[in-house]
Length: 357
Image (cartoon, rainbow, N blue to C red):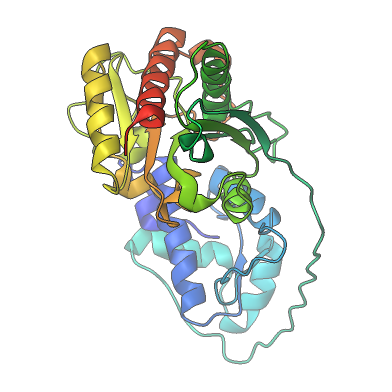
């Protein structure tokens, strides 16, 4: 995998490069390629992105048993060393280092066809069952009729594991913060003498990082029928704060809200939820923003409810430089902010669970 000219610019960070490069891979596969051979940059000792792709390519794909997902055509990513690349290039009279130097000098792509080289690639794929569990708790509603309806709160409890370098991704914010907040909110509702009219489901779901698998399974096997599910509230990354509020979200990957900021993702599919959220934010002195809705509606567990027509409200304090990295640790959590998120979520759920319609 040789470096592209745009990867050398100071204006690009790791997340920008990742999106750019993954987009290129997707375009190649959609153009009909059977496989892509990636090799590290021969002129650059820092090949962190190559290692990241290596981690990504080795994870495989995940889905619930019996479900059918469309896969990208081809989608075979083969990682090779520079020696193999030079052997493939031998017919062209150039080696990888020379080609990369030409790209660096000209600032332009250097593509060409190697006519007399053929090869056979055999990729062995293994399918295995992996067992995961959603953890469910229910507070039964107090109304004899409305208790058959529910509000469901979700938070994923998985993370991305260990890096290729053996570093542990603890995931304190993603999503230790959401799971702990959900536990506190569940405890508060369970201690109420007079329970809300509707039932409340608390779901700690698995395998969000593997493709929203746990929440997909829940929507296929709900404890209350989906037609009786009035709303989903999803908590994902609710534990961090920047020193001050952002004036504008220019880059969603660097969207960490300030001490009073909170991102609300609804997809505009429920005016009732939006109105309740705005009222509670005003009461608690929180500053709501929907700036992440377009970018993240499909990237966390609320999406499986949203696509089934259920009103959703996803809560986050935004992304930061430690997203999916070992630096996402407990000492960077803003616990006061987390308490305010818990208060907000509790009040929103209580009002929706008691709503007359």
